[in-house]
Every structure is written in structure tokens, then in C-alpha cells.
Length: 263
Image (tube, rainbow, N blue to C red; front, side, top):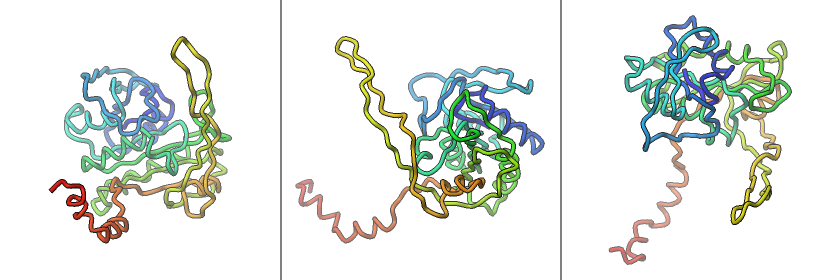
């Protein structure tokens, strides 16, 4: 198990407690919050590993690196044999649509499948909407659902290059109306560039923070959350545009080397 909110995050503890009965659990998580770090890795500095106690009194490894570093440490021998499954989360806030490209939670799960280990990423909206510390979360529905998915992810017939990206709506468990398999939706970011101050030759800008919206498209993870459903999106790492490849073949791309005077 890992996350990107840090080893002390309440979502990690809630998810661990939900999967505890499924087998031997190893928690390897960042020592501080590494949200929105995506697939960042630590390559220039050594990774510091500290054994700590989390909220239920069990031991965990707190890592000075990123969520992807945590998964690699587990796969390369920190816990002995590689794990049977990687479970990442539960994130404080949703990871939907375009957000998955920034998410450390999703990145950790993707690292698992890149290493041949099945993986699940789990995220939860705050009650009433929102993300981040200081808000109120109820993880019970999404973590119970994720725990039921773990055996499916471990089955040999499940594609090893696919993760489950699970998101829970920001409502009470009693109000959750079901679960739905979805595709990624499209976020609409309405960020602005704001000058917040100056210090000598340095200027301080903020470029994020405006409320996000999204395209209203049926069948997406975003619409499922709007409908009070748990969203489950199968994701893989192959970003190749196959249709685009076919189109580029018609451009006689190889001839561009001659046109450029390379050969």
C-alpha cells in the first residue's frame, strides 16, 4: 500500500483497515505530502527509509521520495518478495478525467502495472465536494468497494497492464446509489495568472486555484460522481494514438529526413 498524501494521511489508514483481512499488508508511503507529483522519481539523492507507527499501531515505511519511489522500493526487495498487488490511496480528493496525469496516487498504481504487479488507485471526494486536508471525508463506501476489487485484480485473467482507478462521491455511504464502469472525462480548468507580490527583482505569481468544471458527457467518471456513483475506470499506460499513426504514414514521414538534409 502507498499514497501521495503522506504516511500519516487518514485515507491511507482507512484503506489499510479495509483490506487488512485480505493478506499481509505492507505500507510504504511518502514521509510528507507529495500530492500532484505525478510520475516523479528520485534519481539524484539517496532514499531515506524510516520505520514509523501509523494510526492503528502497526508499522509502516516512511520514504523521503515519491509514490513511484515507494512502489519501486517494494518491488525491488524492501519487503522481501515483490507484492502480489499494489493498492494506492485513499486520496484526499478525486482523481478524475485529465487529473489522472498529475496524480501521484494514480502514478503509484501505474508503476505497479509497469512492473507486472496488478494495481488499484482509490480516491475520495470530501463531503460536499473538495479536496485537501481540513475537510471532512467518509472513506467507508469507497474503501469497502476497493477491498472487494482486490481479488479481481489478482486473478490471472485480469490484464496485467490495466489498473482500476476508483473514485468515491462526496456524499454519505447511505446515499451512494451504486458503482459504474466509466471512461475518463474531460476537465475544464479555469486558472488565472495572478501577481501576488514582488520582492526586489522577483515576482510572486499564483496560477492555480479557480474552481474546475467539466464537460457533461454520459459514461464518464465525472458524470458518475455527479450521479452519486462510485466510478471505476480501467486505465493503461499505452498513450500511442493508433489512428494518428495511420494518418502520419500518409505523410511519407521518412522523406522528411531527406527534405531536412539529414541524409
